[in-house]
Length: 355
Figure 1 (cartoon, rainbow, N blue to C red):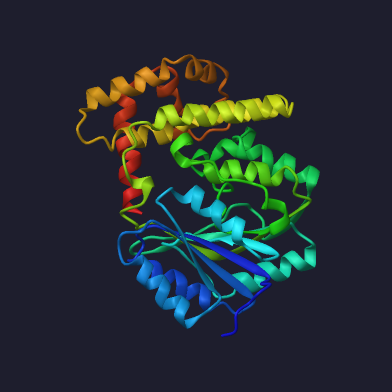
Figure 2 (cartoon, rainbow, N blue to C red):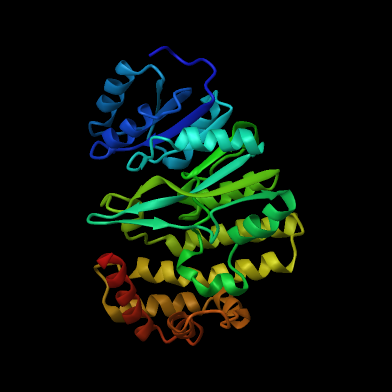
């Protein structure tokens, strides 16, 4: 296949020790029905057979570019990919995932027709024995202008408000960058923050900065991205002893952004709700510490809930729209009944693992 010097779409793939999944990922990219693409593989210091797989594919398809970096994490890999991308549009794909063969064709055509800066799709969560579609919005198709983007997407990245809180477990379903096509000009000067500094949500912070200048946003309820939930090496399955401290850095960044941009009470309330709801993630993280007893885990969560930030957040927290199970959960948090809270978190994890 001839080399593409000015591709329409650049696909950025950060790769670290992904030999178990990389063939499926790259197959889905080289077999796109829309061929005017470049595939930028960022090898993040892999020590398994990932490099050999990349080379094998690049020898067969010269739309594939291999870029090397010392192991620096997914944020640095994506940033390096943006720097070398030549496409009019950019897409991010994780190396353990894969995409529908028509994803580039469908999203590119919509972006052109709608003159959109961003096109976002629904996706499929791929478990060991089942596939579950994730509908991000209750609509099949919509287009937003800048003021609508700020109100309905940008603010929601800070946290949920009102009836959005009916499903707190879905709080960050809109934050992902990998089921999204971006106009290159929108993100060319944007950077992903190192996940080691903020724990998680590097996608969300990137989206916040990208969407602040987005003129047209399109959502299509077509599950074109396949998100693998069975990667045992995923950072989301490992205990993170410093997660609480890193999330405080994240909240500080978000608070500063609200102040600098004078975004007002809605944003502050949304972030307050994010802080309260972060106890779901902090609880799930805490129970993965196998060396600790339930009592020790309970004491750790109580220590977190006694901090000024969390006490202030729960004093302002509105329970009105929450389903009963989450009213109970966050009630345990507010009144620091952490032994029962730990037991409930174990139940949440059991239900998550059964999916």
